[in-house]
Length: 388
Ligand SMILES: *Cc1c(COP(=O)(O)O)cnc(C)c1O
Image 1 (cartoon, rainbow, N blue to C red):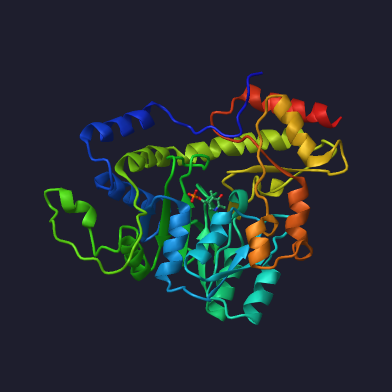
Image 2: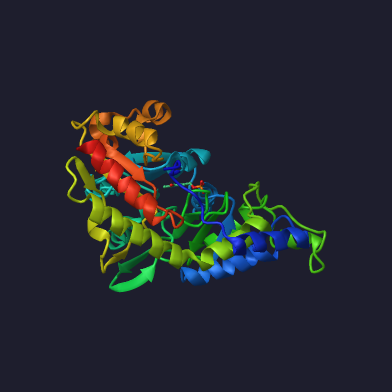
């Protein structure tokens, strides 16, 4: 078997043609394609505003800024996530309170969230929909209303995802005060680098639109078009976070196949679950959400847990798979295990039993539309052989 990478984006002829067309048209930065992508995206997630940016990290930063979060403000973040979720608080001299996750799901521990918001005056919470499984948004929004904090959903893993919220099925993107998506190279919609923030709050959306492009009043991206004008006004020291037309063109073609790619990942998840369920030494995270009527899981990640007492445990398992030409990854090294967060926030592993339990065991297997049936079979067989 040739090497099976952990991830490969699904780039087809239509993607390539769409980007080529934009390159030929000659508008390389933010322009009409970006606006078209924002329109298509907000329709897709049924939200009132979609603000495109150059990463999910930028989206979260701008969301906090637009909410007026600043020096000394407290923001709750789960421990099992990428550093971006917590680092954005430092950009604004705010401080994260990092709390543990439920070892059964990898999602923020809701009891700890409630204890934390009772004890401290929290300005915001950034729940992470780990792997594409959605947090209990009814519970989080109830707490937000009761204790008066804002919710920024880290939906980097969530395309496509649906949840039953207050009795109604809806896509992720209009529940939290702001929802942030990623189009990074390994995400379910991949454009290289890119992100989107959706919100029902026009004021927040407008502030984010200004701050993503140098704090210039409005529509400054038009200034080299016929409709545009050379005159502009800077109203705030903003950032350089805008998306570009070639990225947006790719975003549009990727979005068109988002549902199909999701179906394909669900099929792969089902194959893995059927193939690995009875294997000793392995358990499968999120297995029970395969056919859930409450939640449409995006299956951005397929995470299995390796019994640490078997065969050298997780690290050895990853090396063995690599030697058999199978690429894997680990999502994530918990924040409390990184030197910066440990020192800066004086974190102690003993306070994160859920994340510690998962981190000792988790491996993410390849799951993407171009993974062939023969690859899936080979991965299942190799894993079974290794653990026998
Ligand atoms: C990838 C990722 C991000 C960051 O996304 P970018 O678009 O690369 O900024 C944030 N949070 C989580 C959970 C992620 O996996």
